Length: 489
Image (tube, rainbow, N blue to C red; front, side, top):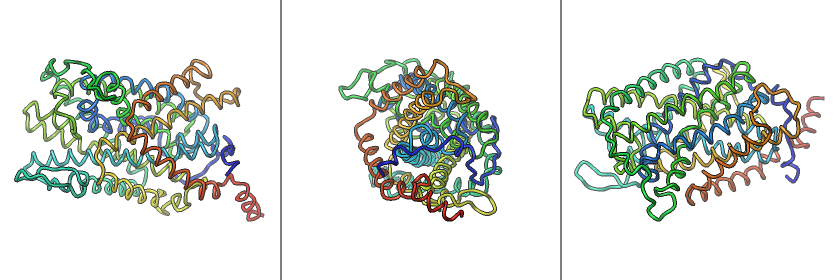
């Protein structure tokens, strides 16, 4: 264990890593994947909560601050992706640049990011489904559409405790089965759904724009209530932390390296293209949404688009938009569960997680055991925890991974300055990575104490698992290398 911190994988070993997955993604596949995940995960779910609880109309600024910080980290991701061609995203980059213990911490954080993120999106999807069905005259029992033990209003006006968010588990099961059928087939379905989602967004902007009320933007930055993170500038930063949940798409793009043709070239294109496209969409859409709906009414609104479209009093359009949003969530969950399984696959191939997670289905060549594990974990979280808590937990894990990737660029620049790089972060060794560390760190510090406590508990649990399993089973452990050499001879 004492030497585990210093163990690093070589770039060559990552480049030659063979997982058995089919390489079917090109640059446009990756951008579609990234946009499909990013546009929806926060826009359709957390915009209302971030505005109602933290930033007010200034949530528009939050959606600007988040991509700026993401851009610094995204450039660092792009440089490392052009060098390190194995899957695993920030985990693999850290393994090469900073060592095994740091890589485990990042990998464990990514497991948190993808698992909790998928749970948050599934929870929001449940809200949209309920709203859609109500428009068709079908009412689901609210005790089966909300997180466990939250207060729900029954048809007779009484207040009861929710049991379990059942629709969220249902959609997670559907996406898991889709992914287990194979990457080629599921990616085609993903591309079609992305097109539907873009049409929905364009429709909402066009229809809602005339209904914007300028009074909904006043005051643009509501005065702080006396509590850090509740409006004022601290609220803008707190909302920016939640908005990071909306930009995990480019991170998931880099986790699909093992599914990508010519990853040194295509992954950087996918990362940067995703960030540029999504930042513009988010800012415009958030501005229209807040202009139509008073932020004070969206404190716990997990489906703000449905709320906004109801305001324009066009029932036929409301049904179409809600249906489109409900379908559009497929791409978000598709990408998150894909990223989760690829992280598990890569860590299992390195020996840090049980080898069962790297087992591929003989016919479809998909990591079916990793998909099943992800489904179970996500379903439990989505069914029992409220969306606001899930969103914050996702963001802090993402921010931590971003900071470590920025450090990795600095470390590799210093250690191997002459290494060939397909893409090089502009501004020298320190400028962009340090800006990424500062911006991401500032947003992390603005997050609430409960989120930090949950991250700490998750990290401690991860380090215990690493100490008693990962460090011993690692393929870089000299004892395991000696056993492998004896077996080979």
